[in-house]
Length: 332
Image 1: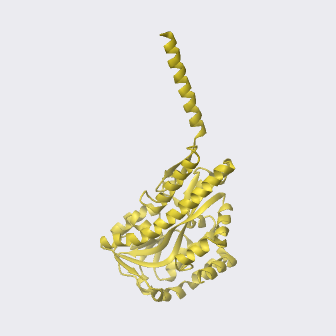
Image 2: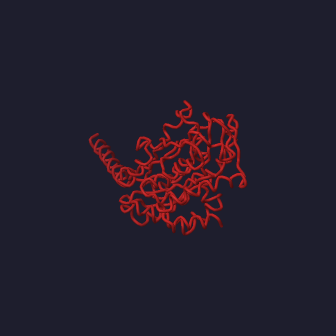
Image 3: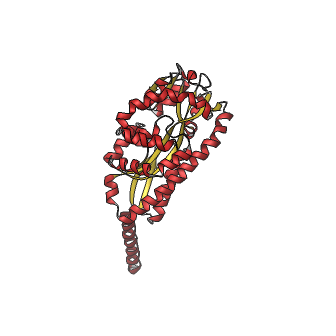
């Protein structure tokens, strides 16, 4: 009996030490995303986490926090927390980076990239590498660049097919100077507001409309409180998959390669989902009674001269060379 008790005790101790060793080998990291579990952001983040866990044999576990919950919905604060190390990893928009480094606003300038062909040519080329270097300048190691699609506009007042249709509309925008200037030049009354407050503002009609990628509009259920949507591809929404610099420096070379490879695959996956969702979710919006209008290149032309002043205003902030490179590549 005594022998059995000793063997049982030995087994328990052995299991304890084995489990302790396994736990000691596992490191957990917090990854923040802006949108909900219904978004392409989450799909991409989930694939990234799964790939990293499998390729590191469970030694690197990434916990996903949707809806910007780690920074209580404050998008700029979320990026600052990533820079400071309070958040380990994040899917962050270049719009958020522009709040701390205005050069990033170049990606989102009005109609600077007219379609996905231009986006892929620019982001997958030397200018994409230049953007990655700019991310490094901001204490974040970029693993890959994903995308949430082109930003479209919705409202409750009228169908937007020409510049005059924007006059007087109260449009929620990200709190960036470029967006304020863009909508001012188009005749709208633009106002910044946290995304978390947007649904209720549209529902209560304190705002007439807003602009976002289609996947963001539908995952945030904004189409439920809007009547009109215009597809005009006026601004692209780029996503950076980034890691806090100190966290990045703590990884060995093998783990870094795993993170990079996994992030590139997740970025491509997220980008393709966002593009497919843009097509599919237009039907979802239509089924909810939203009138969706797609502007042709000819219909977009009258908007372009109106935003020339925005380019002149932003050139000193972004840098004339960087802005010129993007404009040149976008027009090819």
